[in-house]
Image (cartoon, rainbow, N blue to C red):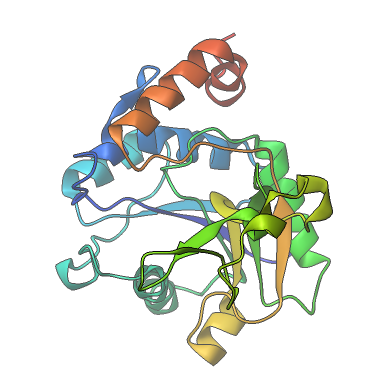
Length: 243
């Protein structure tokens, strides 16, 4: 069976929501929600947290994950890329036994997940050998074809269009293609592809459609997550065995 490792990035330098990855949501640090979902997965073999903070690492370990390394400061800044921490983790695996076949990338900023959906995504990727990666998406409430850009002359125009004529954008949404936005529910990466191409996703990314999710980028988002948890407490019960 292929080796599958969950990799959860949790750097400490967030500015929009200070210390967001350990901010308490429903009695648990934010990072604990992703760890709990990974622990409930039937397909994930190990759970690794990549952090630049010894404090975050200790919290991760207390929740049942591993934090076997501290991410260097040079790849833990605001401008560091996801590829940076993915490669750093793969290099660590290579130096300490063996690399996994697949990395399941779980962002703490998307805390509410169904572990069964994580497993469905893993199995879909396994069954799609031509795919270079898998990314989770959800349907946009309004088609992207009905959205706008602003020209240099400060005039609205339909996104991607050379024309500033807007009347067609007022057509019923059913007349436009359905469009999707990427979210942080679950991404799956192939180690072989990443190593060979020095890329994470490539040009044959299979979509995994999830329910619409809230992602934490601001204090307002955090309040929305608290509201969702109040309205739908069953997700807490599923992940933390509270009942």
